[in-house]
Image 1 (cartoon, rainbow, N blue to C red):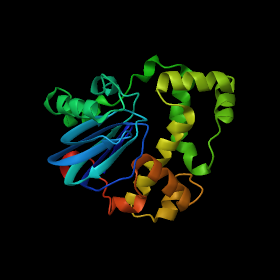
Image 2 (tube, rainbow, N blue to C red):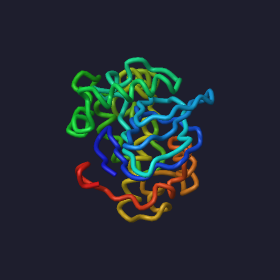
Image 3 (spheres, helix red, strand yellow):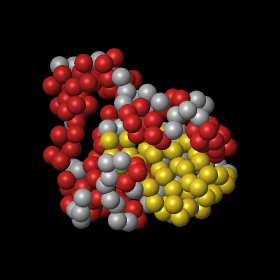
Image 4 (tube, rainbow, N blue to C red):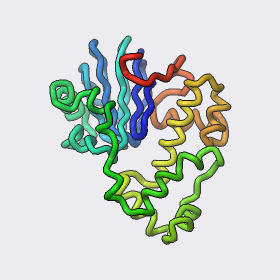
Length: 233
């Protein structure tokens, strides 16, 4: 597993998952074919897909070795990877083929193309995204408290956050928690320790969120190993 701001890359075996959705753009690529399905029950066999954020999907047949890239929707390249956001599997496969043969490869994404231009964001949103990682372990992160820090109304901050980050505040916090929990799990913590360290109420809470985002329990990710470069995996 490679973790960087706005980016999570997982390599290894990919198994069958339940129908789920997550807040990231997901790229799945394998040398062998796998089967992906949409919420309408349509299934496609392919070697690469690009799935837009918040789009229900499931892995119907996995692959012995694959790469999964989860990319923050605010990333500069996200719109280029999903030029035609849709909830149908045929479009995901078409975008996967474009990614596989196009100029935006995995190396470019990992090298730093994931970073959004935060300089254009409202200063209050920039401060919130900078402060949030340090608040996760303390339990609930309240928008009202962040609004007080940046001297905006809660409703104004919520609107700015969604407009500029591309995710509602709670969804963004949930994704940060999941990333941090997986980082702790990969570092050798138990699921309970990872859950508490990332600010989840308990391992059952982490399990529910993981199911909703990935269609699988965190234990199904096996023995995660953190790497600094894709070539190490």
